Image 1 (tube, helix red, strand yellow):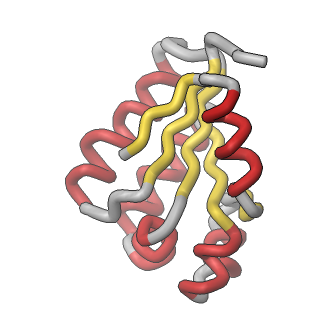
Image 2 (cartoon, helix red, strand yellow):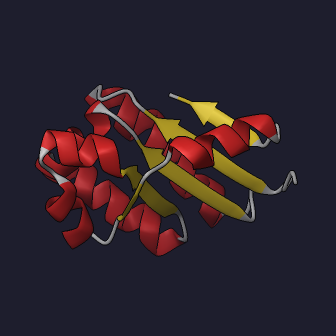
Image 3 (tube, rainbow, N blue to C red):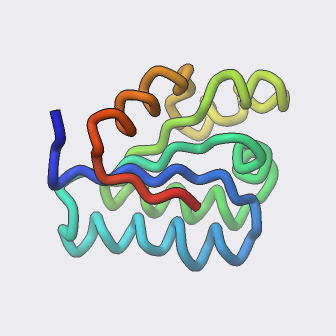
Length: 114
């Protein structure tokens, strides 16, 4: 069932500028300005490694989380990249996302892919 005020951001691009100036900026501002009732950023692929290794990105995630953005990472990706424990230490949920993403797509929910 579609939730019109819920946004998912599928974050697969590990480019630092795109991560900082689009994904994290939009997610945080969406929460702060109540553009969406709920914002979830899905960390998938190379971004799991970026999050685990880059202090600037980790700080931006902390700020966005404090503003109300939810972060969740793909467990398969995090395990394969060896960063699961680091993501969990940052307070990021780590789960298998294949079924969840499929449901989001099948239900035509609001999804931005970066």
